[in-house]
Length: 97
Image (cartoon, rainbow, N blue to C red; front, side, top):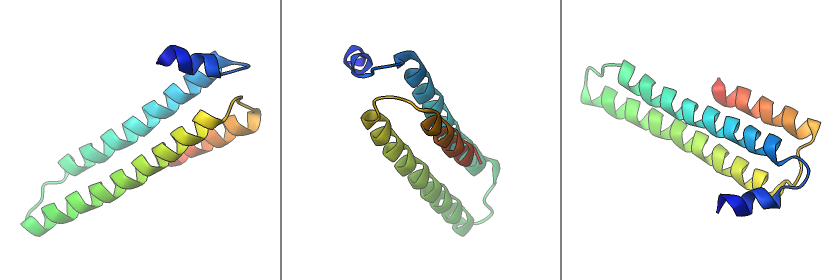
């Protein structure tokens, strides 16, 4: 399966694979940090717990939906350009925030 994916890339497969790996790592870290934030706060009431879980679920859905959109776009782009790399880095910066 991964061999088929590598053959689809044209000019610089190694760079594109590394950029996608970095992006996946940043998205994964953003989700992990969100879950650690959920554990860091000790809820005092059941309402506090429900609010914390709801806020985590909301942020989880945002990050995952952005990641799915990113994955779809990267599957279509056949070649990385300087502009695409810059936009990718801007996206990763926003996700890391």
